[in-house]
Length: 251
Image (cartoon, rainbow, N blue to C red; front, side):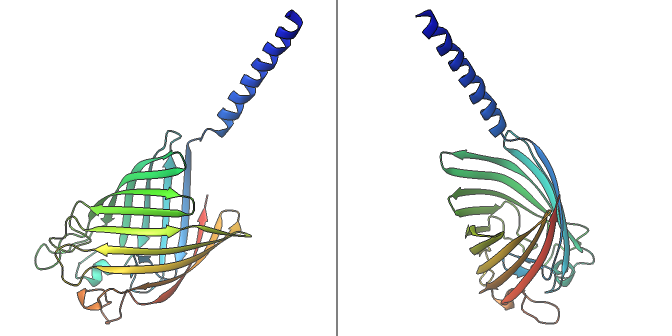
């Protein structure tokens, strides 16, 4: 009995140590990452933010092993000045939230602040300060992600649009050999407007080039109403069908 019991206890102890080591190895670690990129047109929710022209972009993210995260991301823009501001050529997004999972369903909840540096939109007429706050929640199951974003302030400089919202559905399809296909559909509700709301569509193909480099090509379209103000000073529709290509380096 002694001869049988001792080896069994040793095996049990070794198994426990092995399981603990595997659990520790599988535990997520905190991380700090950076990214820089360039795009042929900065489209956000289907609408060009850069007057249908190229933009420079970059960001920083910190993800804690507990699930909490914070980050900041920026891009050059043109729409603030196009809307009548005396200044405002950069967008800075500041965000934070928590990611977790319940069974096979992952979730993400957080807060996002869109800061348009130096924007001087007048507080009269149809435009107000463009800085916008949103809270959001997303769930992912398998290939699919659904997300809801709710504005707690006026939305992107449009007066009396607090409680506007955006809902979208996307999928991430691994094609192999570093290729990833992302179909997307979203709906932007702009409160208290007759023609501000719209639906946007996108089909994005990403290619992992290795060493932190990713190339992308996206076919983007919307049914937005150009008359609402979705237009450049030259009268070009900023929600029109377009092909957007980009290159990003993450490190």
